[in-house]
Length: 329
Image (cartoon, rainbow, N blue to C red):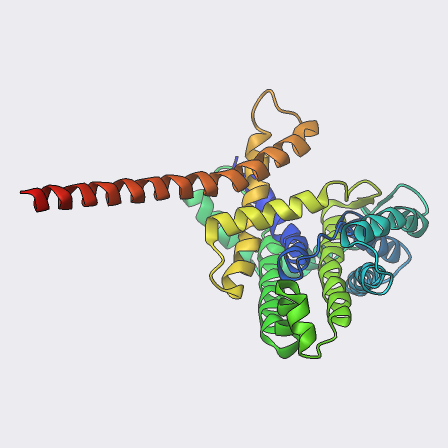
């Protein structure tokens, strides 16, 4: 069980980058960007085909990041310059990326099992530090039988994801970042201050999809392959991570919200893994489980809020009734 949860945590911290991208488009820009389902695959495709052709994994991952930025910018241009509905802009780009991804890969999937990836390179360096032995000995002393073969992916991805989270926080507090947030809140108002909302939308969507592609590139290297269908439903997973994180951890500040999104991505993967342990559920039920998790995350806070409001009103009525009795007495 520990190994299953640990693997879910590893995947969750990588998918958290994609969730941060979805957060930027849906929450900050208020833009329903369905490009994500296509651009996630683009990240994996660009990274995989680059590595197969001898490009160093770090550089290949950077190429994926740039490809995502370009894809997001095109979606933004379709919307702002082409005057196409935001939802339709994302759908059109997602459809176009399906063919583009096939062109990039040359076939429906590319294997990386025998190729040097970022994570394999990290394992070689990580093993010399002796951290795995120390952590596994600690777990064994606590009675945990099955321990991970390496902690390199989890620990290094925590550092990378948190670094990107802090950079995102910093960016959203800069002048451009504040203008970006204002564009999502009230585009007409920020335009009245002579801000170029078209450029802000294009750049915002570019950054959003760059993070999505970065996640796709890392997932491809983590799993050892990239597939043309790996992005199906990715936007729902991203939204699930955002909604779950906001419901559990709150949204009082930008820093807290971005941390909540990361936490939501991890919680989502762990809940999904535990759900698949149920006997009558199969791997093919993943999308159904995702839908149920999202529904629960959306409904539960409203039910709790309604109960709190009902309790508050009940207390208020009781207080008024006691006051009336005191006045009559």
